[in-house]
Length: 179
Image (cartoon, rainbow, N blue to C red; front, side, top):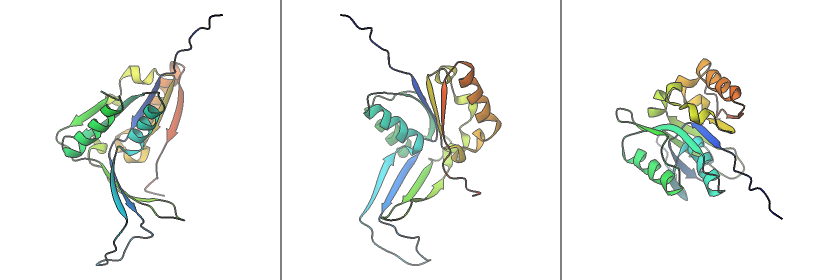
């Protein structure tokens, strides 16, 4: 008996691609002048969008990824990490922009907290998102509040284009800095 091979769904991930510096453990932010040693400070690629794309690739579903980085050692590191997972193309390199960097503070028994430098994320706009990325079966938008040029009407426009071609939308907003 022959079975038809089912094709994999196409997935796109759109949004913030940046460096994450993860501090462990960090129970609270310290007052001015204080210093505490921690167990680890790790550097990871690549923001919530890049992390989602890397997780999908580890699960055997390499997505299309769209985002941007600065042209510096952090940008190169992110691109190398993505390429090692089979994720190539889709990340714009903006030579005049500093990198986006987030410092995550983590500790047992508390939610994470973050300090972020938007850098190149400020320049990421709807015009950078290719039409074929929006034509995927599933489109995940990440880092909404770290992408000022995509807030509001631009994101709604992109989502409407996904809906027009029958795709399903997933949305990870990140934290609203206005609360």
